[in-house]
Every structure is written in structure tokens, then in C-alpha cells.
Image (tube, rainbow, N blue to C red; front, side, top):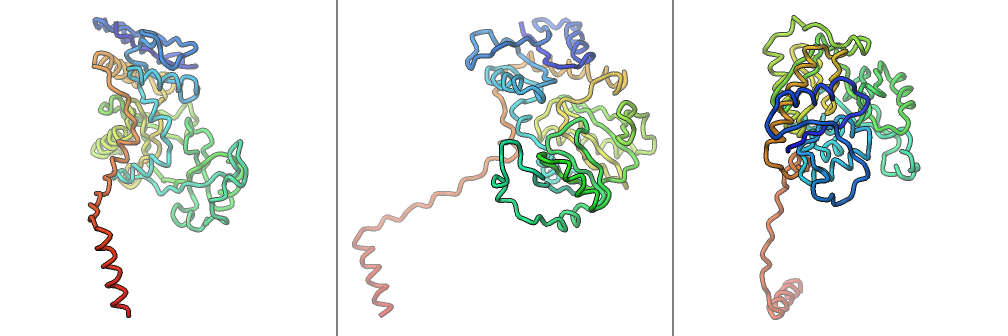
Length: 341
């Protein structure tokens, strides 16, 4: 039996709907269930980590689950999404990677911690220049932007900034967080693109300026289909580069350009009360397709995505050392001394 496990936290709708959808398909030899895990050994006994696939919806918040999933991956379980890469990802790397892939992103700068992280002191930050070159930051980004943490989610600790005074006032509030400062985009449309299996895309009209429960909106009718198709291609490009099988990529559209704003959402919103019933059904069905396909496929070794992103650096060719005898070296030295005299 090829078991598909769903690991989740406080969610109500999506995990149960996913398990039900997979089991209703009646695929021979495939069964879905909720994951149950207790204390975990380093080397699991035969059959102990018995899931062919685990759909992960909570390990980004629970370190115990994250470590468990890494060992499960080493033991042959396919984890959606790759727990090794999720542990290494951050928003600043996302933006730098997108720029190298030709995907439009607003100008962004990495900002040092305002206060030393817990367990460290000012001496731990001794390699950071002082005073910081804030003129360079505002010249690159401007004075209207967003301060946001490199590993945040759900719009947590995200601040809109208008002017230098407001920037420094908010920067004081960030304390131990490591932040990026990104130029604000005066958008006329905004989308969240849910990408599943690095190929299926669902574009959802969205407005981050609205209250949280009202952000999914009717279609932006003025946006041409060609721009939406290009945005969806960029979303797939980013997810393939990052190795995410399930992810949401947010785009702000302005002056005919789709700017990738946030694409570190490997546990995307899947609540029918927020995304809407049609979007919810699509996500459940596509993730079910993906999980079943991976359960039926031969197990693959876990992919450490950083190696793929950075590429294998060619090693410099070793020069063959010319063999020289002591006599030849001595003759060479004498010749040089004679030429100087």
C-alpha cells in the first residue's frame, strides 16, 4: 500500500478535503490519511516511516515536524514541499534569484538587524559597517516602500513606509528581525498565482489593500490576457527554480509590467472562506493529482536545492608541475645572480 500522509495544524477545510478527494479516486494501492508521529529515531525501523508521500502544511512553524520530515525524506518519503530547501529559503535570495532569471522585481535592499538576535551581543555584529550608508538605500529603493522580514509570512511584521522619518521609526520596531526594504509598486491590479506541480497555475485576483477577509476580489477586467499568461509563465519559472511543488507567487501589475512581490509561500492559503469555493476546489484537485502521481512514482533521493540553484562551480584545472632537478634549480639561481652582477 502506497500511503499519502497529510501533516497539518489548525486548518479545518483543506486537509480533510484533500484526504477525501484522494480516497474517492479509488486508485489501486493508494490511500490517504492524516500523519501520526511520536518520538522519532535516527534510523527508523523497517516500515516505521511508511508514507510514500507527505503533504506538509505545518512544519514551517513546528521545528519537530521539520526535522522529522527531513529524515523521512532520507528514508525514501517524497515530501511536498522539499523540507531541505524550505529550511534554506529566504525572501532576499528569492528576489536576487528572480532578477537573475529575468523576472521583474522591485528594487530591494537587505537591511541588518536593528538589535543583535537573541543569544548574541553587539560584538556579534562587529563586521557590519557603522554608520550604515542609508543614502545608498534610499537612492536605490526610494522613500516609499515596504519593510518586511526575510522569512515572514501572512503579512506578519510587514510595514509600509512613506519617507525617511517613518522608515527609521519603523526600523526601530523591527528589533532582532532581519528585514528587506523594497520599493512600493503603485499597482492597478494584483494577483496571487497558485502553482502546483511546477506546471499548473491558478491566477486569483487579489487586493492586499483590503481587510484580510476581503482580499480575494472579482477578476481585474482591464488586464490583458497576454499579461496574465506572461505572469503565469514567470510564476512557473520561479517555482521550478526554487523547487516548490506547491507555492503561491504574488504579482503587482503596473504600467504593463508584472512585478513578483512575494513567492515564499510554500504553505499557501487554501481556506474556502478566503480563496473562494472555486479556487479551493481547484487547489484540492491539483494537489491530489500531484500527491497520487508522486506516490505511484519510484522514490527519488532528496534534492538539496541550493546545489541546483548555484550550479556546480568548475574546479580550476590543476597545472602539471614541471619536474626539475636540484642541479637545474641551482644553475637557474646562479644565472640570475650573474645577470645582476
